[in-house]
Length: 342
Image 1 (cartoon, helix red, strand yellow):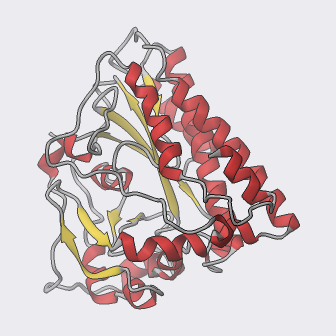
Image 2 (cartoon, rainbow, N blue to C red; image 1 turned 120 degrees about the vertical axis):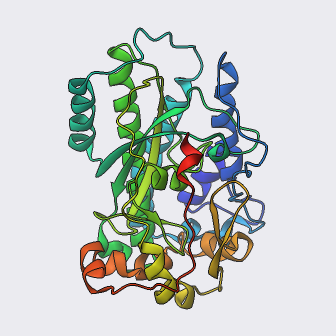
């Protein structure tokens, strides 16, 4: 994976170079959890993690067509991202024996202050339902800290483009750094903490973020939050802290009533991969995207992100959309059940 990625970033891909396998990379990260002696397993109805790989030759991958300065930009984000993902995965190699499982209000405040100072936009908490754990995977504890990182509007507006993908890479790199920093802080204070994988972990991050009250899943399958709209990335830290301040109400679910009227992401998708109406899944989540239709265009075109960029919540902001929206009583309702977290 790393050799293939290096060849692409250095412009050395030829007809024999295979496209790097993100699925293989993530699976190698997941295998570090094999060392866990106690863990939480997925429910029988859990879905597998959506595959990322395509059959495209390496030369057709967007990253293979970067110019000199762009290659340096890519390396400056890819290297620390990969290193921090490796650091996170190695935290699973040895069992950590916690001293405490109850955190004081002051401790939670310190955690949140550190998260914001490190670049996290928002942070919330959730008890992970087994149906949010991907099929064949496992997590060390059922409690999770969920945090978001904002992506700047200007580069995202250019999607699909290198500038947009560079901003996405910056977001992933920041998430990996923040996750490791917070996990180390918790461990130093006697709590178990295992960072999620920034590029894609063993749980459905978007599902967890909605359950945590960070926002609502839009028709494009992305979280829409008050602070960042859809311009965000999500990561987790699994912990043994049992008294996290978990929210059980979500005030943002009106967002999907707006989505049912808007459909801008559906219309703008260049490969018609976004469903006119999300399909409820058996695991409590929603299927919004035909990933087979999306995957190849996504890989060729710098991670696409058109749906993210054109979303009104990304463009004019959550508050303005809410102020102008008069309601849609006939909108289809897709609410992830609150009892899924119990």
